[in-house]
Image 1 (cartoon, rainbow over the protein chains, first blue to last red):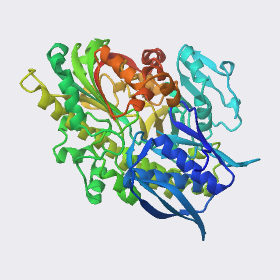
Image 2: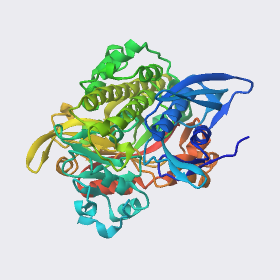
Image 3: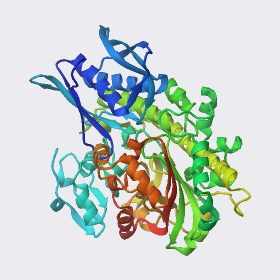
Image 4: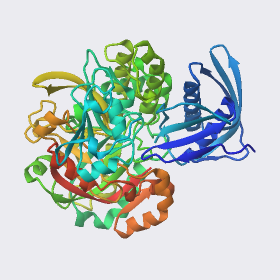
Length: 135
Length: 485
């Protein structure tokens, strides 16, 4: 099991998550786990789902927000929770292949992933960012 | 980002403060705060004022960025923020309206007294809970095709009336008669339509609620009489918005404008403030889509009102003399609209963004239903769960000082995680029940996040807008039944 590289930080009304990782793909994986944690997702045992989707290249910040908004949508609309991700480069973007389990329940409604003061910073150990979610 | 302290505010009066453009070089207009000194000091604990300063840098912003006393930190715009932009030189910012487009409050009144309904509280709570779908991922009992939803979000409350969900009086007593002109579903993504078609008539989660209240105190007899509010009768508040439909519309346009903003040469202090010139294709497309979201929210509250009426009939018919609910008004508190306001003595049309602020037009406004023209627009200010809510009314001064706007709620002071650390949902439920409040909640942690101590004192918030003269008190409500998703 990979370490938990995210923590919830205080925000008066919404939710904010500090996420870090040695590279961008780790950052994306950790942000996904953090999002599911904030949503309070419970998984259905012995279920399986997989999906592929594409993200447009514009900046690393837009890829991060698009990725999380896609997972939010897939969790709410298709009841899908992903734990394994593969990221492949494609022209002008990235292809994401993911697999996981079906959602049993979600306890918190997150409306959207925002761009509020979003900046992916380089650190000694890799990358770090703070993501704000509208609830 | 600059820090800010009390010395940097100019005191206009006890309830009005200003930060001049000299505070930061990129400000185009001052920031005007309506709050008591105590609430202003509290607001310095988070970034709400600095977020208002950021908003004051938007191109074409006019007069001042206004901040209401229930302000708290948001993402981009502060909650409680009002900003007006010039239609020719200014911008429209989706984040200035928010993801929950046209989140708002509807108030229904009854001729049912507390004594009459007391034996039926529990049944009424259960019945409303059964009739009104609530909670995360809970779909509506009504599923529309995409083309039906497209038609509904163009026609707004008129569609609800045609389908038998609304009366003519309901439509008349809704802000903008429940329909913003210029809605164009072709500017809404397939994904948004798909999310929306299953969610019309659902409450959702978070801070959304349906509440049965007691009209505890009347402060303005004549206005209350005109609104049909009587002391010791019960009333119903419905607080919700445009659900996944609105969230997706905002998500789509905030994303689209991330690159467009560079094309327009606009520099911003926060990426979430992305915007487009109102006259540009991006700006026009967002406005057309946002109006679909706004009309969806008017419909959503209308369909829930219809369900609440069914619950009242089912529970109280034959047990009380008159179980019918009449609509007092329905107000939006996350919206963008073109309105006429007097700025430096000149009447101008401006695009008013309200993010967690309620329109509060004064007496004589032609945008009000005939019966409210003399008194002004009703404004509903829900308190935190288990505390009072207020019915206010707009004033002449709100028209001259705050772009016809007032506060929208109590305003948070504590993060959700801190509230959960300090409050146990089951304890809170027990405490509310000990106070005689029937609560139906989908999630105990969710209940804890909405604990009263996580919010400001709504009475202080109301005292500030009344002290500033941008609203007047009409009635105070006390909760009897609370339904939360």
